[in-house]
Length: 276
Image 1 (cartoon, rainbow, N blue to C red):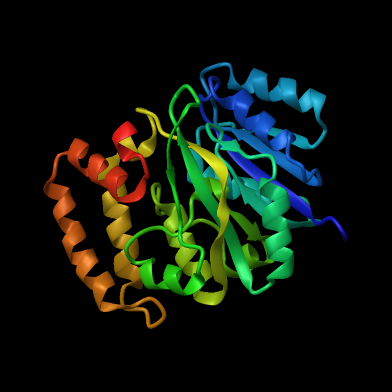
Image 2 (image 1 turned 90 degrees about the vertical axis):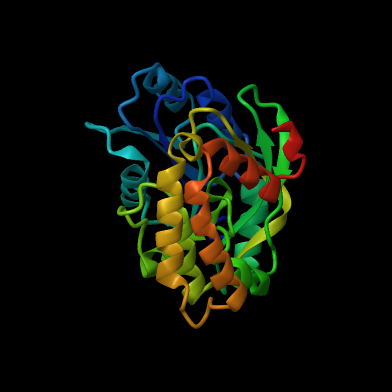
């Protein structure tokens, strides 16, 4: 096909406030050959009505509702099972974020030209609960640097990533053991076999809020991060002495107050962190 089909996978739970912006950012993409799989995970707000309203307007939307609350990891994996057999790429997205209009066009162009890459993401603008840009985060674009630093931190922003469908079929879906950081674990498996990277552009607006998992479940996030790093730490492809030192130092975060750890994360990863 001249225009490969993309399957967009977006779980949703109680995001009625941000859902219209998220959905419209996908429907307004300059690249239009996609199916938009939205799975509502038993929301208690008006989310399902909003999803149905958009589905009636645009037949690219395939709306599903879980019979019971599966949480985000199982819901994402369920989405993979609902994809069209004809799809070639998978775009991961969250229902409180915003995709820039040219995201799909630029990512699919890159992946079509670089078949040795299994996944590609981008830099992210950081937005608040009012969708105001309050900072930005840049990611490594060079694969060698990504491999060098992957033990230290996740190399790709999950809601910015596009993955080859055949790649996911080869390495497997999200590991449901990890209720947090499941994307980080998946990047290791992909990077073991394929290249991964980021476009040197800001193609996502990533929302930070008081209710997101990183804020409300910080200790669990740290636990899973360390578990994933331990699993891959001595793998020949990823090992380096600085990664080992960083891994050992990271354990001290368990003993710091949550507010301090979150502040450190923002200072180390976000530009304009003082505004966050």
